[in-house]
Amino acid sequence: MPWFPLVFDWFKWVLMTVSSSYMSSTISTSRGTLQQTMLSPCESPNHGPSASFRPPHPDFNDVDEIDLISVSWNQDYGCFAAGTSSGFRIFNCEPFKETFRRDLKSGGFKIVEMLFRCNILALVGAGGNSHYPPNKVIIWDDHQSRCIGEFAFRSDVRAVKLRRDRIIVVLEHKIYVYSFIDLKLIHQIETLANPRGLCSLSHHSSTSVLACPGLQRGQVRVEHFGLNMIKLINAHDSNIACITLTVDGLLLATASIRGTLIRIFNTVDGTRLQEVRRGVDRAEIYNITLSPNVQWLAVSSDKGTVHIFSLRVRVVGEDSSSHLTPGQSPALFNQTSSTPIDALISPSSGANPSSSLSFMRGVLPKYFSSEWSFAQFHLPEDTQFIAAFGSQNTVIIVGMDGSFYRCSFDPVNGGQMLQQEYVHFLKTDSRPR
View 1 (tube, helix red, strand yellow):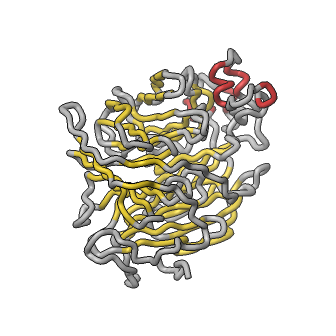
View 2 (cartoon, rainbow, N blue to C red; view 1 turned 45 degrees about the horizontal axis):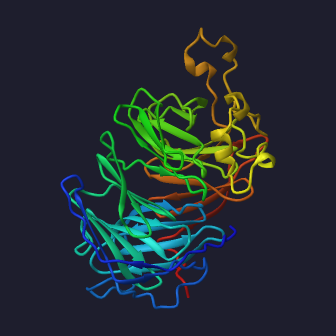
View 3 (tube, rainbow, N blue to C red; view 1 turned 90 degrees about the vertical axis):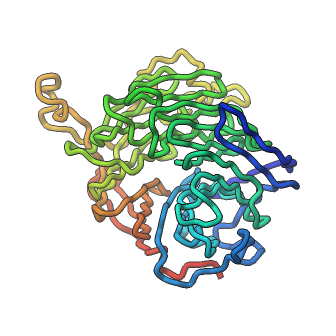
């Protein structure tokens, strides 16, 4: 996985406390400066592993029996973070290797959110963490080995999302948007009950898009901050279970708590571009991810199968890049153009199979005309997995049982994927040396 340069300015963090009747949070930052530094995928930072996480004296935990609390991808899917009962660990995916770990005796973390591959992370403690409660977000600078900011709330934090200019904190009924430079609140969004902490961000430097549940069942709210526009999309009849944006925020993929259908929408006008079917039986969707070229979509669920679907949406920028003005992104071109929606649909190298009775669409039940998965990989049904696309038609899968899979699929014929690599990352001694 290539490393892209991140250029950040030095900026001052000021000491402040925010408290008001409409915002149930307080913010505190440490004095000094913050430098965002790239961390090598194969080396630890210069300082020792026992970083000063505050007392009581953090250190490596050599006990094999460690509980895994959470797993999450970074923004480019090249790394993943594992929150454990005694701290957290960061892993590189290609090649697979533990980059670094921070263990402490006060408890673990239920949320570990990376900012690409730099030294800044957002941490939220698990219920048993004596120093970091589940209603507080810690902004951790691993280069300086210290906490450089805190957000405290009156209720538990459900999710945290980062991009280079924003910090997003998701509570059950509200989402707070903060500036990364000075930690000031710049936006807040009311949502329907959101116990899953559903929220997705674009990460293109020229677009700023956020998707989250709306105020009605099955509704997704899309905030186009750069265009100063809100789009409400009635995606499903049931409550939303999973949402994912493309890197530029132009496309949105959704699933409901029924877990049978995945739908893809244009986030500017709300038009539904494609619908694919995971199955007929109800399922819990764990995650949806889109390939970087928006040609493939992967879905993991409690049915023990990762499904790959072929997308018919146009690869972003494939026909528009030659018409862009300097500094204009492909997504912004599509958002501001008058191109009909049909222009966003194009055939891909593989086609999703459908029923032989699909010609009787409108007569037989809807699932006879559905698009089914193009490729599949089978996993244990009793474990939660998240998937992402790797290089050269590969899919990377990480499980809450501590398993790491790399498998490949045939982009022309599809079918069963082939396992290429398996690692038990909690028990394998892959720590940096």
